[in-house]
Image (cartoon, rainbow, N blue to C red; front, side, top):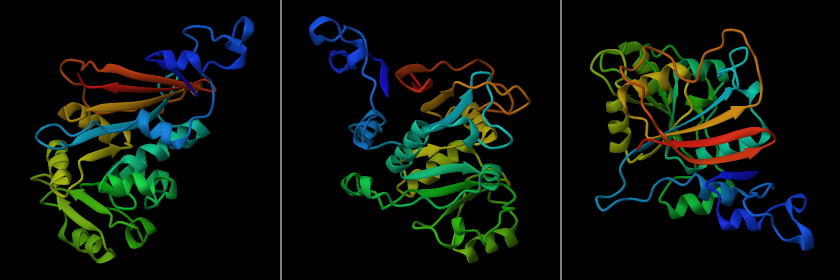
Length: 275
């Protein structure tokens, strides 16, 4: 793993042997290329510190895209991922209070409950977090298989975000399976801004969404996304796969600011923040 941006004196001093000049001196501006520890990854992706008024909700998205803009291959993100991408995926989950995901992604990706990670146990305890993040599924219809482990045996009860007018029989089925149903919209659908507020009201202020594209598109359109962690995969897939965000376009493109850029094995790991 190399840090390409921002470049610091420390990254130059840790340059690999092949990037060292005569006498072993580091070549200025050449970043280190080595496997980062989980602690280093956690520090690189830490949530913002609370302000004077306390910790406000912070919503980050974690997505992967190929060079030609595909967010999936044959309906799944795993084929365009990598080992380093999955380590960052796990780190981001370990830092979050809750992982927000769309119902279609739950169905296609075979979502399971988040697990406790011994490597992050002390960090989560010090941050006042439980052993693992909750999973919050966004759904209007609640057409989900409530016999899956995501609902029947999570370490932390799974949340179901839906509208106030959601089908009563499906709400009852979700609650019977052990899920906590949260109304985050007036009709059958979910309002992204209200979803963020409802989760914050439950004490979940460190929010992570893993999509899918339709859910991320709704969050972008609603202006609630604070941060995008985008892995750029050095692959080309062609085809008609979805982009990382779908749905109607916003009236004016929203510009984010590059905060960091890491690289390993040709994969680029970017962090962009809302100004």
